Image 1 (cartoon, rainbow, N blue to C red):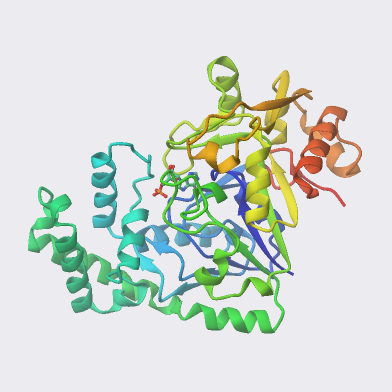
Image 2: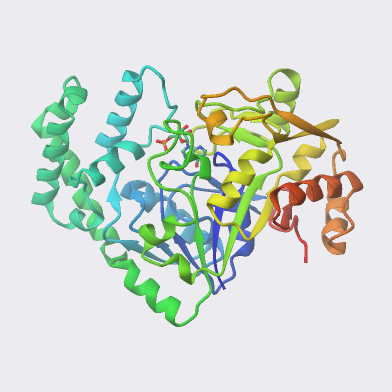
Length: 422
Ligand code: IMP
């Protein structure tokens, strides 16, 4: 089976856990967008692993790909890869020679651009936007350039020239600094060159031999540069269709799109959030769900599940099945609300882009309480039809409005606490 796992909200939906769960030893994992702005957490036997560049399936899979659609900080890559190899020594990695390189200068520019904005986006400061910007201006530093010191110096000089006004007061206006940055990037080449290739060719071979493949989306659908809540978005296409331009594999070769949504909503950074919860309820949900950014540690904004969002992003990603995460966290709320629409004549994107104010219409459910570990095990063992009644009602309501089946439900952090509904 070839499938893609995508987030249906603002990122942080729990894609890492679902990817890890769906990954077998023989599954090839492919990342096709973003960089270290992504943060995926996987918990196995009480140990927690955080992924930023490497796919979350890397603990189980034997072979992973970092596709051409990604922006890669090579130092961050090496650090993460080394760490994962301690757990999974067999893991083989392929890096696209066409992926673009994030340098310390891009990160500096990211911070400087953010500071100069009247309305801040709240970027992760990981250099994502500036690196994509250079890629599309055709001045980008590609992974393959790391092996050519002269080219590196030229491209870094060009970057510093085009961004002169932002860099004027920084060390990067000093030619010696440019040489230092180029030399340090070049020093990485020896360590990664064996992994670098035209990944699309290898991937086509795997498609032809019908291998199990999982394409792992980073960030979330509403952070998509075209379809998200622009300008409060990331700088890549995050939706399922982006696997084609981000890896070279056609969407026509994909059998199943798994859309992942949290049982409530969270958002990091700025932008409209119609179901946002403030006050005590918001604090409670944030604390119960440990809603702090994996990448930046920032507290996440939290709110009720927003079905207009899910309806839009389910269609946008052509989702086949839904995976709902953190349902155990939501259960701790006494009363649970779900937004079913934004009121008359209020379209989802008009609201999310702040053109119209939402008047959220809620359906209200009773909480199902905190679930003890043995209760979770029992629910998972028995499967569908044995969830607490209120939880079952909640899930059925989502299915009714979204018109897609909820096939996977995550009841806790651990890999084992995952319910598959047949
Ligand atoms: P950037 O991707 O660092 O440029 O950040 C742009 C916006 O996307 C900011 O609001 C970030 O907080 C948000 N963002 C980017 N990646 C993620 C993610 O993986 N999860 C949640 N938010 C993200």
